[in-house]
Length: 406
Image: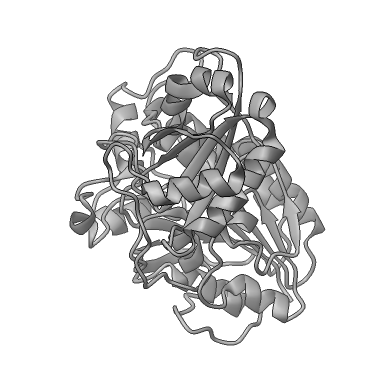
């Protein structure tokens, strides 16, 4: 019996979504625009990186070919590999949202065919009735922010007042989220998590996908910094996912990073944590070492989205991709005959795009493993094909959605 390793490069879209116009994202292309900017010298940063985007391992696994499938052209300035070593494809999302839970659940074989609840992009975006209930249930006197905002900008704007008043900072985005920023020491991490639990209960009826704890440290606007103690309080998937099917069959699902939070803990048997992409890759390698026959290691690499995509940081995103590319050889070195690894994404977050939100894009599907012959997987109509292929590889019966490309 084989093992499977699923890495989600959070927000690493490759453009070309057939329904991008409906989301206001026609032309968005996370990989393509990063490559274009780097080729033009606009992705240079002293002491970080310079020149064209260099992803030799991802390219050898078929990334450039996947991008061409998605957009009909290769990313600018990127060097073609001497030979291809993996199977490659590009997948479209059928879920109605372009958010993290929708993307991950669909990857795991459960598309989201309902509409999430959202908060309007206007001042005082949260209903007063909801705020009053939060204040009453959580025993707090009020809140700051209460608007759409970038997570880093809002703590610069309200962080000092928060430290003085101890009022938490509430904010949201174009996603179905209620985010709460609070100081780890002046407000308290445990107090923040308990507050999020209260808000989670009060937002179920509004169909809000996630309540997110965003702790930070520092004493001034210049030194405020978010920590690695983020936690997502998610709605559980509406149907059985690949994770549930595996655990029901007696297998282990080793979740790395925020995977367990995204699935509300359902179908997860072990947790591995890490602060930042590099630490998460290291944690994933440890999980790979400990995975047994028939097990799945499922990793989310959050920095691509949280640190670089939302902050519209082209140079940082490019450097993070190059850093991950350099570690793919470590992943490959831990694989045994019969294992497969899948590298993909859950949505786009084009750092050259307007605003600071996710973008509707196709995602790469790169599959490799000892003895796996390279070749094209073509255009896939749903991310669910990824979960169905892993299920097939691990010996499970057919699921409700998707088709195996193996």
